[in-house]
Length: 214
View 1: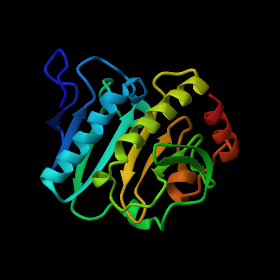
View 2: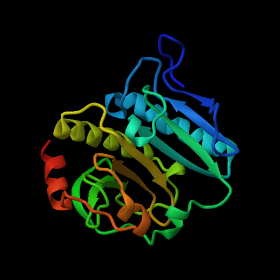
View 3: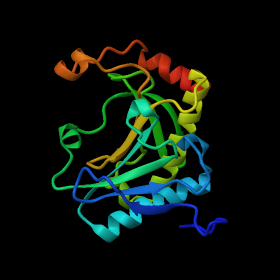
């Protein structure tokens, strides 16, 4: 997609080492960038278009994911996302019962962001359309949501004085689709993984205040 100097700005290729039957890589530009926070709004709009076009063309249950930084599972330093097709709805999405209560952060272009009151990790953020929609991969608000995600990643980098900040992000459909920003600035240990009890040293109110003021 796009018409950059190399003939493209965003492109989709098969994952050479897929964990699932079908998995694709969305390359966020020909120039070497390490973080989604470095992408222009135009490139982010093309990423949203790539996600939506591939989901439409292939069909089935597609979940977009983004890993940034070695600690978050990224195998390549160049900014990219992945599209994975699942045989059944993602268990994590099925377990959700609507959006959780959040500490409001900001609202822009029809989408809103907030830190969950029960945040699992410092600076966890949910980004969702102001008016509930079921499918993000069919929504005109996906591009604004990705632009807001990138802005919050930049703010997080300022707070942490670190680029890139290790993080994961993904899209969940449901009664109210949303993007989740899950920074990996703390380690998940036995209590978190074995009991599902998350120890978060940063209160959501503090996280929202810092992200809002960065």
